[in-house]
Image (cartoon, rainbow, N blue to C red; front, side, top):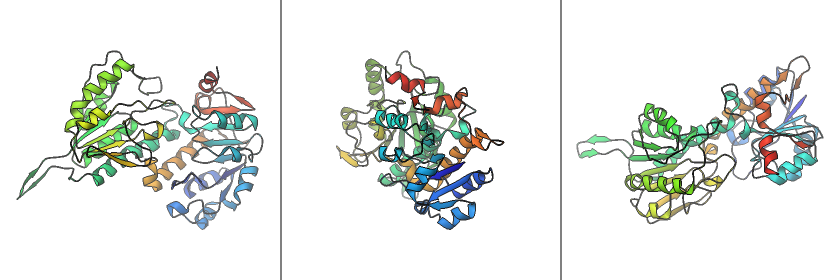
Length: 376
C-alpha cells in the first residue's frame, strides 16, 4: 500500500496535509509513504525530516499516478484526477455539494473519493473531524485579527489616568468556531455577547463567561449532525432586527453562521452596519461560502461608513503549524480506524456509518446518498 502526499498548490495555502510525526505512525503500520519534495517548506519542515520519518521523495506526477491513496488538503484540479490510477482512494476537502464536475471526474476515472467535510459529527468520528478542528482554529484567529485591527485595547484597564472599559464583542453563531471565538475574546478580557438560533447552546455560551442573547424566532433547531437549520425569510428578518441594537454598541462583531452544503445566510445588512460605531470591526467568517455580511468581499478588507469589514479566507492558514498538526492527525486517525493489519490495506466498509457519510464516489458511481439526491 502506497500513500502519496503532493504539495498543496492552492494560492496562498501554508498548511501541510501530513507532518513527519504522522508519517512515522503510518510507516510503522507497513505503509509506504511518498511525499513531494518541499512538502513541508511552508511550515519550516525539511525534506530530511520527512525522510527521517520514513517517507520517500518523488515527482508530483509519479506520486499521483502510483499511489493507492492520495492525501491532500484542498480539492484537486480536474486535470490531476485524470493522473490518478484507477481504483485509487483520494482523501481531502472536496466541497461535494458545489463541485459537480469534480465529482463526475472521480466517477469517470473510477476513483474512490472521501470528502473530509462529510465526516459525521459523532463521538466515534470526533478524532477525524477535520471540519471541526479547522473551524476551532478559525474562531481563534478571527478574534486575534479583530483585536489587531481595532484602535482600542480589549480588556478593562485601571490606570492613574482613569479606567478604560472593556471592548464589547458580539459573536453571531455558537458552533465550533463561535465557541472558540467566545473563549478567545473572553481570555483577552472582552465583554462578550453571543447569539445562536439553537437554544440548546445557551449553556455552553454561558459556561465560557459570555451572555447569551435571546431572540424569539419561533420554531428553530439543529440537524442530526449538530448544524443550525436554515431559517425562513421571516425568521431571518426577526433575527436581524434583534441583532441590530447589539451590533450598534459592539466594538467587534464576528459572524460564523454557515449552512452545510449551502450558501451562507446574510445576517448583517447595510442598514445594520450604518448603525454601528465608526472604527468598529466586523469579521465575516463565512465569506468563503457567500458571506454573512452585506458588502463583505473574499480576501479583502473594506470600509463602510467607518466600519471595517474583514473578509479574509482560509483563517486556519494564519496558524498553519497547528492547523497542519490537527489536520494531519485527523487524516491518520481516519486511516488507522479503517486499517486492516493482516491484509495491510485501508478498508472502505460501506456499512460503517463514518465511511457511509464521507465516501462520495466508489467503483465508478456516486455512493453518497446526500450527493446522489442532488442529481435528482
